[in-house]
Length: 96
Image 1: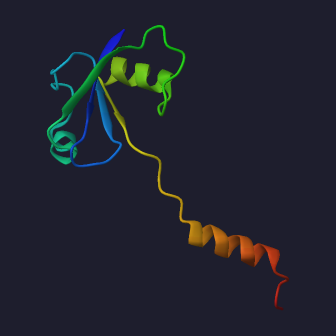
Image 2: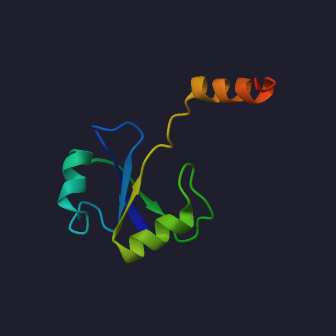
């Protein structure tokens, strides 16, 4: 199984996987307008692969088969201040 990978010029670390190079017919127009003009990265053979760097290989394969594309978005940014506040609150004795 081959797929073509494109990066978004508008959104950092956002990639679009499609079944056939330059065939965006399966990708919704609204997604393409948000994604921006896709910039070709590479063609990748994913049939024999066990994993990808930042995406679940099985999810990529199933979405390519079912929808004709897979959108890889970066993980959400961790709010370190909120984590610190929660940890500090949990560590302090309750004020009742």
